[in-house]
Length: 237
Image 1 (spheres, helix red, strand yellow):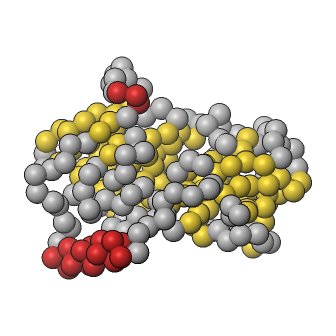
Image 2 (cartoon, rainbow, N blue to C red):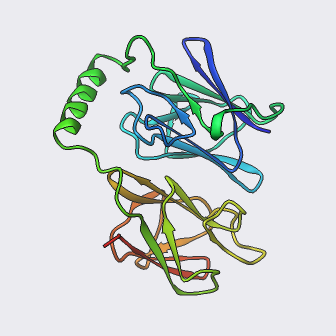
Image 3 (cartoon, rainbow, N blue to C red):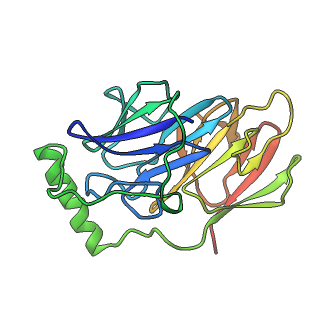
């Protein structure tokens, strides 16, 4: 089974098998937890899309990098090095047996010294953290929903409770598309403390009649057309 190997300063900290999805971030509801201020609450995720594994940045503060290039989403290959803060995760598609972990989680120990990216980013990060203490990030609350307006779907409404919810033909999709020529993953909808955003992963998607290109924040009432399915995005009341 493919795996991610978490490293810091050439030290291997943990190995994590990649099933349908793993999330990476600072909060304890992530699969891989990196307890460090340089890492966002929900920083990135890796999910399976058919035969591929996709890395998606979840609008993190410091960004997510693959082989030293900043990415929003990226198909991973064996040997790719993901950089989050100053932690590296090496992707190995041909890894051995799954590595056991308690309740499916890998809890990272706190580092003795806080790691910052550089002096300028250190100051900016401190300012952000101080601001967050004065205005706490809203990570809780009710989940938004996708309401089916038209098309073939197995539910009339889907709750977007996960950090990342997928629309596509793949088994891991929250909203399952049917048909031979539907993309395994058409859209990934990510959730963080600031709201929701949709990322184009395959095929063609329209939001309010306009093509989705790359990543776009979602607003209450937005209408998504995904491979013959029409969905309305609604925030929790």
